[in-house]
Image 1 (cartoon, protein in one colour):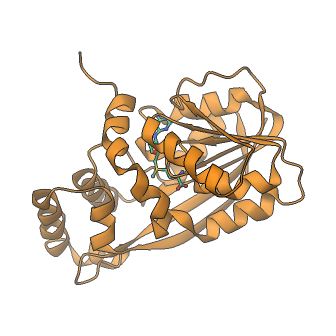
Image 2 (tube, helix red, strand yellow):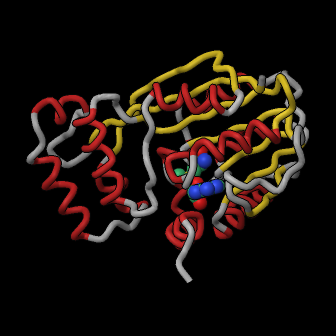
Length: 254
Ligand SMILES: C[S@@+](CC[C@H](N)C(=O)[O-])C[C@H]1O[C@@H](n2cnc3c(N)ncnc32)[C@H](O)[C@@H]1O
């Protein structure tokens, strides 16, 4: 039987789960600080962390929430989150294995939905956002953070190619315009969008995904042969490190 995209992503991430707990790129960032500031003092109630990975959103949200439900398609990620939550004394984090596109929760179950660095793996962004909207209470807050692609076709193709060579479970980075349209179509009102540049160090970027050498070499060849405008836009360095834009969309369930 052929694997669904969700099973494909889970098979990819399973053996790599521990690396996402220790990853510096995932454990910190201005978007996480802003997220925590939004939750602080809000009495956030029940929070959903969609595509929780190594759990960094859940660990930051838990002190400000009644309950945090960390959802992911990868069982090994959820096991890491349970172990880390216990080690950190965060007793209000629970886990649930599910796909963003098909959530096993009733309408309006959550006060807040958070999702960070996961949507670019979803099989269907629109379906995942509609599910997020369905399980969020009307007026509830959502914060979606993900790596963005530039609107220009040449830059977009280049980024998606690097991403896919690195990680075959990569689906698509979306542009600012695509995010805005998808959020609106799913029933969210976007209140704020914050962008920042995330520097990626090449060696740890490919180590985290255990990218085969042949694919890493292909990325380097692609980078070296890229037009100057591409090299400049992604600030590609001599060792293959580059910068990617991160967008955080603060939205409310309309
Ligand atoms: C880069 S990790 C997430 C990082 C994490 N949110 C953080 O802030 O550190 C991406 C996660 O998305 C999960 N994922 C991929 N497709 C998914 C889907 N359709 N539904 C839910 N989770 C998914 C993967 O299993 C993986 O754990």
